[in-house]
Image (tube, rainbow, N blue to C red; front, side, top):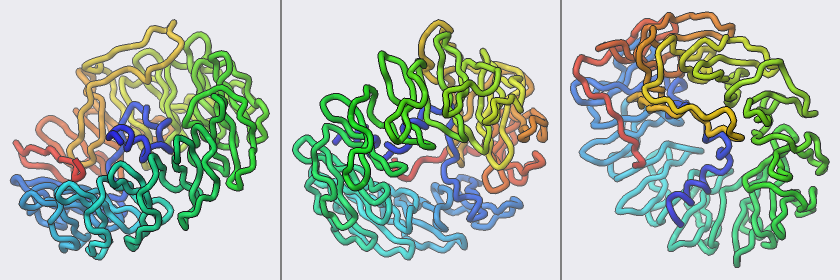
Length: 453
């Protein structure tokens, strides 16, 4: 299996969200641990929310905390520390991944295994690839075949499938002889392979393909919606509705297979917060309700996912935010914006993207543009559009009030009460008042590599 194919297996539940314009903070557990990685005199350590050094800088590289542990590198090897700075898993691996459900993937000599949060090597590195645990089991690859292991490293299902997915709602999709079926968590074939394609279960239903048509089945195998629809793979039910296509246009069906919204849109996205974003014939984006009625009077060049109840919208080259009722609660006045996080959104006032490529309005699709040059913030690895000119980055609240004045050259999302920011030679973390609580020393190089590169 290629690396791209492996990623599709791991990321399938989130494929539709993957086109969002901005990145997300790497490690949303940071605020829970109350520690943020920082660099000083060429070494990484950690600060607390007040900016006080909690773990002295002594690591070559450091990442954020997940489930109480953070990956750190020393002498070219990765291990894990706890929130007191104690070495929970000594550096011994060439690559690691964050903890998930009490386990972390680790690589040594090109093979993958698992350690637990006590530092025990519960699965010695032996597999060609491992997915993060899902519902207590982890998908593994060995010799081009796929199987499953448990939390204690027990081999539940020996690698024997040509393709497979992670567990969702108690079942995992697997391919046998070119056809797809489903396993239960004991490794028993719950639904025999009979489908050309099968997706993950979500909201009790899984998409299946037969004879080039798509439908949905229940966990019992009963056909809930007969395969009779055109469309594409990876479509799941969201808030009781799923996307389908007819004659090249998108609409929605309910769980009984009835057409809830006629197929009349060039593009459509899953329902969130009771509404869905769709693109009309004039290449404009609007919100609709489950009956297909337009929500709000505004139309936009682009609408993104909802975060904390608000969705980022764009008109030409400026951004604002709408609520699920279609009300423009943050005016479209900003040259760039990140999604809301902890009640605040980073916005750029004035200026332009250093590279901007707008789609023509007559095109019947939205390539999730404009296309940016991005800055990777060093600690969170969050992607922020690289801007030129204007007043800089500031922060607005959910009512559109500018609560942290613009003036930052780069600004990330708030996590646990702190956000990364840069203003001239000053760079580090700011609090919700916009005050730097910790700054790097002048000239420090702040790049941070991923531990699973």
